[in-house]
Image (cartoon, rainbow, N blue to C red; front, side, top):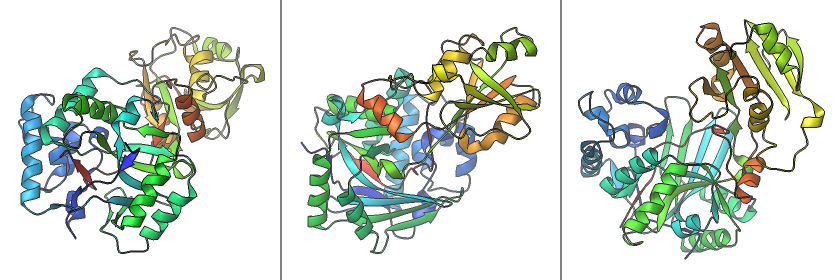
Length: 406
């Protein structure tokens, strides 16, 4: 089997993309989704978050929710908002956020290669979230949420995508958040074959975001004996060098029964501590910002603690946990400890100040963003990153292309 395969995409009809496209299902809660979909009967949120069309007390994991998703998808198809390509295609998908742009390939990714770790992981999954995706995919008979993947440098692929972008786009929508989503259909037989061959020559692909979706796709394939198109899952694969990872910062509710002076003294055991008159955005690995009591500090990890050949231990999220959050603040399991929360760097340093100044949190830490090279090194080593290590922007939209399982 090929690492990737073209497929008959289900996508918005010409001129209808703005009515359909929606934020990813997992970045909005039910209340936010209901508000975003208000007055938008064809928003993909009616498919990805179908509980918004049911009574407010509906359990989002109940069978009625998944049945509603299938019903809403069928209604959208019957109304002509979504069309399906007659023959298998690849698609070029470009995202523009401000000055940043990245262009990737929409393709079916091999479940078999996911199972053998040629499509590499770097996170644990939670059963309840996996079950949710399995039930949703099974109910609608389609994968509607793409997995974000990265491919190593491959100039040939980049060139084919660039050539596809010289044609008229099938979709071009600027979303409410200002991010531009543009899609081109690639149906030329030679280009399809070249792309398939180029990816088959790659040693690996890397999951950037979508571990639960890919794990669910693997379970669906087993449930269906790899029939009905279940041997592949919906993915958008970007060149690693184009992808943008933001910092994923930490806020802590209390100082673990320490007085501020005691806490600062404990921090200085492993870090150089320097007050700052301005918010601290770390400029390199080993640097951290810390905000408490209206004051920013620049923290620099002591040099003798920096070297590490272990790809997980050398991540700044690991260093901060090992040398400060765990020994000083007493948080050893950030997955389950409700004293810690995480703030994506897209919210800026002001987002950290707000959480602390409100009294909700006692201290905040800003980090240097994890690199794609670090992510791939962890995955290549068959390791798992700490929770909330990466925040990717811009986000893929739901509804751009869906993968029907037949």
